[in-house]
Length: 316
Image (cartoon, rainbow, N blue to C red; front, side, top):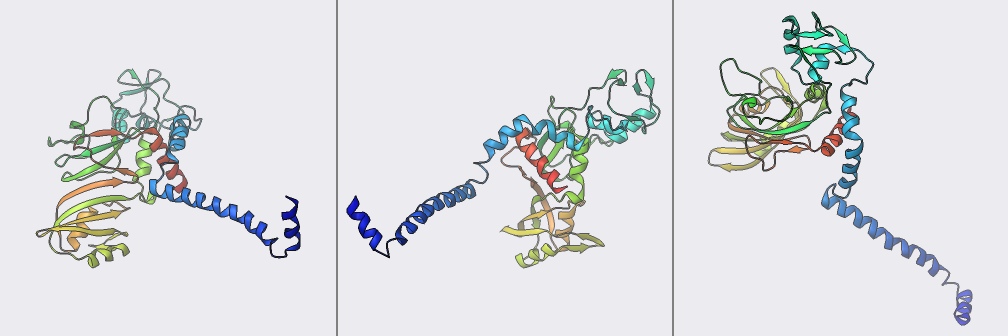
């Protein structure tokens, strides 16, 4: 070993080799890091999901709903209509009617105003039955078929989504709505506060639709929608629209938007000279319709819901 050391000490060019050898180990580590990045890009979030699922199972399902709506542990008084809606008893308007009909009481005394402030539902009864405190936020994906209303009831006797929902889940409220002739993904929740937050335009959650429309349109025309458009005095925000395929005189168009104004997709396409004859919502935020059958009701996993609630909190 001694003979090799002498040449190294005398050779002025070799001291640079150890310096190269040290970095030579670093490039060996760098490809691993790059490889890690590539695998994450290929698999999406798969490497991270197991960890986030573990966290979701321990903390987020309990913690996230409290950020959206105070529970019985909150000392801040709230209007009784809000508390009862949060508990899934009925909508705020329906609760106000129930109060006017003297159906709601506190410790046996009839409540006569929806402005009553409470910190919890302890002692509250509806038609003589005690009301349980609000449970954790739950979210369901419903594949709405065409031909039913997004409403709890219809006085003309038309079918509603509630005629199709299975028995078992808690009282659910739709987040937004789909027209009677529109089908596809409709989110339902038991949390009134979460529902209202999701419906705020400022939330900016993307919705994706697939529309089959009669008429002629070019991709260039659709790309102009990215700047937004005004139709009959109503301003619609940016829309990412792409021509998927043609079937005869019909065009299949995919549109992603964030506002979700009333009949927005139909009105914008009519503005372009198209007549929509089928409309399907395929995505709402991170939730996808997938291969579910019309009429199917699927509960979103608490881990996925917790991550979504966290995203909403960061946006807010």
